[in-house]
Image (cartoon, rainbow, N blue to C red; front, side, top):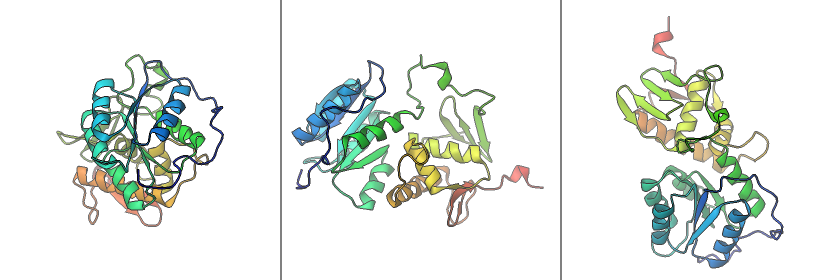
Length: 274
């Protein structure tokens, strides 16, 4: 990597903060050309109970994902050969793994680009291992479509807590199968896009702020992790992608409307108008 900045912020990593246990079968692929950073990330994940597989370039990283079907994949953005953005695209095309981009680039446009091509989170260098772990743990708390079939029943939605099928106009979202349809046509959403759309459908006409939606996208608890302007811009990018996939022009929204100065909410359902 070309950046002279240290990849790890000064902190004591010799005795990592205990982290929740994970399933023994959980694997992480770490795509990082800097051997020192790669080793630190391997140590970090192994201390949390993961089996860690390292790759020093994008091509090898994609093949490692194909071979190991990891739960998480971290990808350095600034690598020789194919960069992290292209690597993330190729990984997303073959896997539902969580993707965390690790980057020395602090530009807003780079982070938004990474999220728009399918990454679930981004971490800028230098990073603190404790914060990195906290962000990954928050991300893993979000239920996903590729969860093990024998996942605890407590993770399954119940009819009393939340309806399994959410409907708005011609959009149908099934929370149990994580399937979305517009009429008879299937709509392919990323995990984050699905979670955001589900939140809006559950909220109906109640406006949700960009801060609220950023916490949904990250799986964070309110007040625990600061929501930055970059996080808010990322939500705007996600909402643009969702609207595009739904065929919903921002100028004349059919499904999702912008509440200026606040965030987003569903449009009025024509069937409920009197």
